[in-house]
Image (cartoon, rainbow, N blue to C red; front, side, top):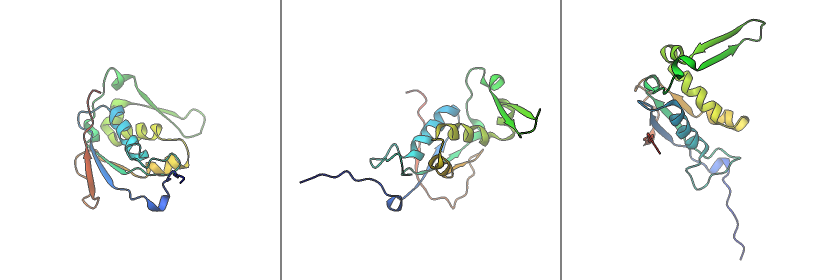
Amino acid sequence: MMHLTKFAKPGEIERKWVLINAEGQSIGRVAAVAVSILRGKDKPIFSPNVIVGDNVVIINAASVKVTGRKNTKKIYYKHSGYVGNMKTYLLKDILQTRPEFALEHAVRLMLPKNKLGRRMLKGVRIYKDANYPTSLKINREIKVSEEE
């Protein structure tokens, strides 16, 4: 009798919502946990060519912890395509104006750089405080460990 490996098919997968509280956690740790859940690495039916992971809601993005001198040394770049139009933003300025962007940027760069990664990114919702829409049915809450 042959044993066949069962692969996940896109129609069979039920994606749930997972809540991550980013308060007091570093940006990289929160992003790494979120990407692991988005890709489905925590599930036994993980398949790299199908989205099997759950959707993620990250709250308290404004109160993430920044270690070292990243507040003044980490720079985000933006360019419109026109000559001489390179804009630079420090992490401390980003965290004051749009704290969700820093976490979204970290998550986006940890995902695969293809169509699958772009579709996975649609399953992320990031909020700067603890208020998020109650229409999202949160199935479980994840605690990010400080040291591993």
